[in-house]
Length: 54
Image 1 (cartoon, rainbow, N blue to C red):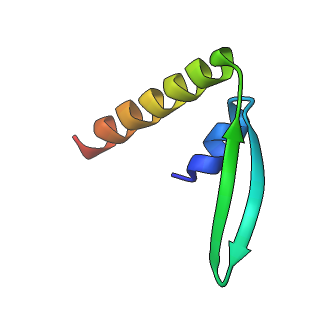
Image 2: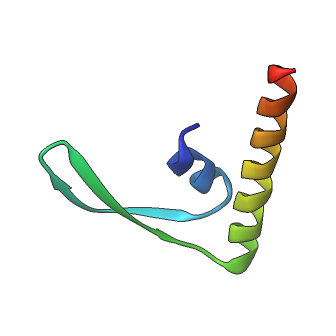
């Protein structure tokens, strides 16, 4: 699961703060509503993953 992609889909803003070698450092900014959408998307993905394992 690409967590940054899920955050973008939720309406969060992802900012690249630094790149040191191959490591990237990001900040994530959002409203509470976007955070709630993010949590719902993660929960749905986990539930779908659990169904696939059965």
